[in-house]
Image 1 (tube, protein in one colour):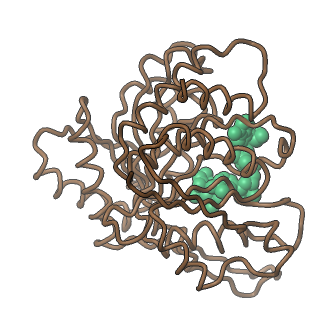
Image 2: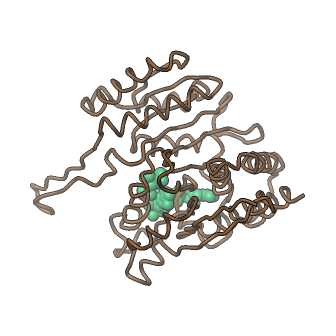
Image 3: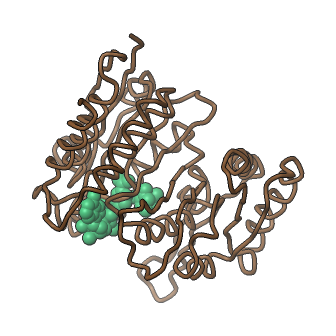
Length: 349
Ligand code: NAD
Ligand code: IPM
Ligand code: MN
């Protein structure tokens, strides 16, 4: 059997609860065809508060040797002053995305037939957001002066490089070209953010010449939120920057059955570094430790992982088992592990 070596960063809050189910399902899905090893890494807010360390350089070297990374969620108690300013989110999650050059943050959205959307008439919802993952306002290149005075000046800088935008846009066109609808929508705010927006629009225009079969569209981010609620079936492949992509994918999750179902992959398409798969949601401190979290988003993220490492059959089986489980859900609320057990059992049979 082929080898598959995974790093597992369960993280904080509901992270360990949902990740346990994702590993359970992934293990059942690959069966004997794969020699699977999982290595747990303790990183997250809990580890930082206990050890004083977020993540060392040696940890990066160890993580880099795995085929892929499965991550639950990170982020501790928002009221804890030792965790202020997203120290874990930036120092761990964003650092991993940047260090492993996860320039594509892939976030598929699908409203499964049996799932109830909060929208009255959603129509067919099946699109993918190709979110940039290493640039934009996330780079932390801001600063402030005269802090705490009436003259405080606070700046966040959005970094958009021609190189970074082009490689993301190219990935978006490849993705759109591989999908039946072959439609790419650039989402930005070119009417205000003229420098970055201009670069994105010019890049889309230039690359589109190489993809004559892909129809190209543009929406401002504010209008895109309207369209996503009023007529989400118009979307196929959305290409957008890091921050707009963060916001629009929580909305995409909400219209397609909720944040408990939304999966994502932080992809390094070049294969130089391991890609990292995680639910779109966070550590949900409000429901943590109670077995209330839906592990489906983590399980579907594991399916994205399997597809990425070339185990597309196992990936498809996980997705099908999730779809069947969704269809079987009634009003009785199951615990986190009951959902994982049911999906794993369906795969084993
Ligand atoms: P969140 O996604 O953790 O929670 C938002 C809401 O969705 C909450 O009501 C929560 O109970 C619910 N929810 C989330 N996942 C669920 C699931 N699987 N099943 C059922 N309900 C679920 O967002 P937040 O409250 O803004 O953030 C909490 C912490 O997580 C913060 O520290 C934040 O920075 C961090 N965060 C981390 C990641 C990540 O690790 N990738 C992503 C987003 C937020
Ligand atoms: C996400 C999260 C992260 C992001 C945070 C926790 C840094 O919201 O993965 O969507 O903004 O990318
Ligand atoms: Mn987010």
